[in-house]
Image (cartoon, rainbow, N blue to C red; front, side, top):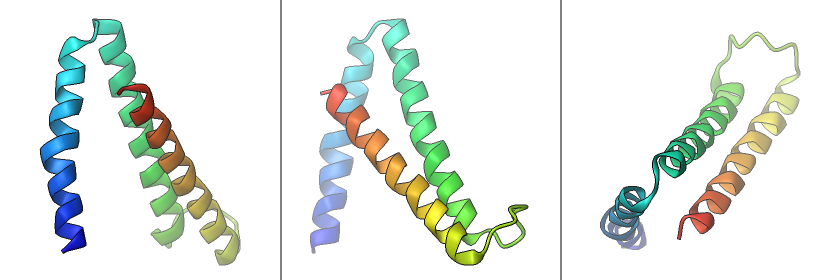
Length: 88
């Protein structure tokens, strides 16, 4: 139930608000919005790749790869939170 409530909140509230905010912004602000979302996704995917991609050419022990991956994922979450708060 909690998961479905969160999904409802994201799909019905957050996404339309993001679209409305995007329509109100100047082209420069829209560009920065897209770049902010892009880098959030880059850090998130990079963190997941470091953790789960076995053939990634990094000469690190597995525990350090997990630490680096978690650090990248946490950083992406912090970036998204700052991004979301700045676009309210």
